[in-house]
Amino acid sequence: MKPIRILSPSLEILGEIDDYESLIFNRSYHDIGEFQIVINKKKHNTDKLKKNNIIIVGDDTKKTGIIKYRQINENDKGIEILTIKGYEIKHITANRITIPPQGLVNEEINGDTESVMKHFINSHIINPVDINRKIDIVQNSINLNRGEIIKWKSRFKNLAVELIDMSSVTNIGWSMYIDYQIKKIIFDVIQGRDLTVNQSINPPAVFSRAFDNIRNQKYIDSDVKFKNVVYVGGKGEGIQREIVSVGDAAGMGRIEIFTDSRDNETVSDLIVHGERTLKELRTQKTLEGEVLTYSNLEYQKDYDLGDIVTIKYDSEDITLHSRIVEVEEIYEPNGFRLAIVFGNKIPTLTDKIKQELKQIQPEITK
Image 1: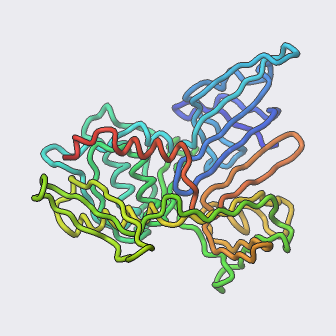
Image 2 (image 1 turned 90 degrees about the vertical axis):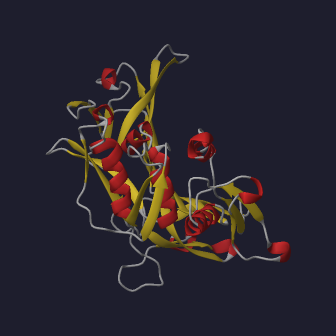
Image 3 (image 1 turned 45 degrees about the vertical axis):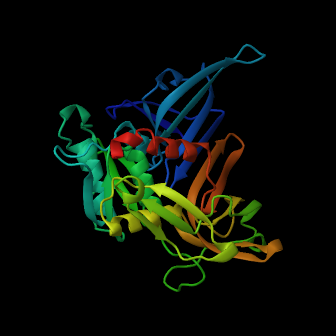
């Protein structure tokens, strides 16, 4: 099993654990992953597993989490078992909201996705106007101007939710990791490689039972949330209110929804809002599976989080060229396992909470 390093909130190394009962670490491309450690409370350095301390899996600083939950249970043998839970370190962005600059209704920026994301990190964490909002140990990586050009407006919204939405719309991932040398938490974006059979630049990564590198597959093709026409409401009241429609489906295949967008003033902004809404409500195609760790493909070398790969569900004759959007690493005394989500993730309770966060102060956006 890989050791777990424990750091203080100021990134001082406190100790290491390597004889835990289990560790599950979830990495997410668009979202914020979670982790769980189960360990006998009597083992060495468990006293360092305190809330807001930071853990690192092995020596991989990109597998970094912050502890948010402790539970002690006494089993039937009288042994105290400690359960630790938390999130990837990028969860610290959930502690900020997007406060517009003084005198402006919205914080608004145009540019490539990386620049927009890093602008919001700088504005609300690194160099905020209110010094009490500053987190000294956070730093942006060098800007390489990656991703498509977007225009983003925000007003009193959860910063983490905004970053997740930008990522989902543009297919640019994001991460935060530790730089030991300068004792900083670094914000960066991720662009996965194209490893599908449709390209010839990189060696392809193909997951199939025929290649004996995946098992316990689950395929989901869902239109539960699917909509293809959205009516977007802008400023104004009653018959004076600006309404635009996005999408041109007709007849039985037309599925409509309404969304409020009072913080957008122009028709073009309302259209952009509608297009983003439809992207969130597209058909959900997801394939999950347990990837065999000893196979023809090596994790984090031949494929990794964010890469686009080819997956085959042989019994259904289904072939998908999909992005790896989540990786769950499971460390136990008897071995190491990987569970991977390819494609569009089906909404979970966490996703629903995010939607509630978006609507928590609807009057502010009016």
